[in-house]
Length: 500
Picture 1 (cartoon, one colour):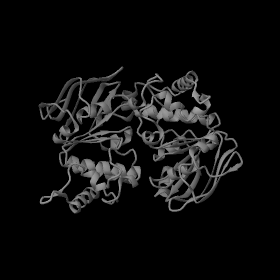
Picture 2 (tube, one colour; picture 1 turned 180 degrees about the vertical axis):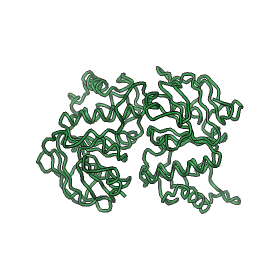
Picture 3 (cartoon, helix red, strand yellow; picture 1 turned 135 degrees about the vertical axis):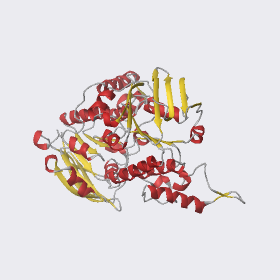
Picture 4 (cartoon, helix red, strand yellow; picture 1 turned 135 degrees about the horizontal axis):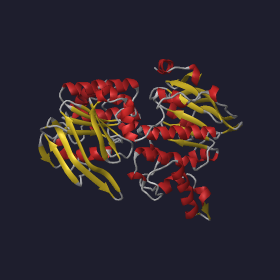
């Protein structure tokens, strides 16, 4: 690191019970620099930025701001120093509107009665939303926004602080390609204004598109800090994972290269007014069926309706040739042999205050109980089986899920459904917010499950990922199916053309 660093963290160490999260890491950001911070899940990235943003305090080491040592004891002090953070997990109040969220704690007030100046609040909010070209009303409740729109609100909130340093943790995880491009335009404007950005992403193609410099962490230690121009994609992957992994996007899954079995699932005329309309498709045993489309195309709503989480106005569901009534509750879908991993694992898939064992077995407790008592030994055996099968870390079944990395939390979410022995597995954005190593492991797992005869419905906003894994691809746009292709029949350009 050099003396130009506006913020410099020197020899930072931090440990938690049983885990050395950071071990003498030195990391600095220069003025007007876009600095990427990368590493596998559990490498220490989140701990490092939480220390810089005042959420944690380091066990040892120094933080220098413009050459002077500072102690950042809480997020308010970080904000006073000019640091704003956009976390991967949203920090919004769902019962407040967009403007109230963006200026929470920094409201504009009318001086005489000290009332909040709602008109000015909305005007200023609109100004920052317009920077991102985000078509979101300042007065709409956050609870009514999609995941992608909530992400845009989080980004807008950070921009409103006019900070010298903005930390962005997986800011594009829920964004469409168009929204991502708008965000990158904004980041480049920040750079022109001599503001600095720490950019954390598992999407290395984005790192090469936007960053000036990259720092790689592994197992809580600094591996390397270098200008992007001196590194290749493969160089960074090798530093991150310490091993060779398969090409991230290799088109290996095509119908012509494998046999598929009987029809497991048929969806006929599924309609929910204003959300999706007249949806018809089938799923075969041993098949990975990809659903592509922009955020808001209706893919997630459709899958939630199939799984019994949302009602429909019309439609039939047929499993193994038998027509069933629409499921009113997920329990009915589970009984019929369907599992579903949600796009938001922390909100919908996991109980973060439970341990791994409790999360893995929670959907299977009917089979692990006798006389209304859970058979603890058998429950632990089931959990340990899937911990080993999916290589979940830590290997301790009693470890709390809250303390785990995103990739390992995602494996727990998948293990929970595998424990129910489903014939059909719906996977909604299963690689969102996880690193290249964990993605590779989930790809292998999906292929293995298909090889075992399970039918997999796979939603992804990354078109190359859809092409990598899917035997057959369905494209949705505004609640309708606008295209269906065998893998070898379609290109990335064709999918995008239909999706927009």
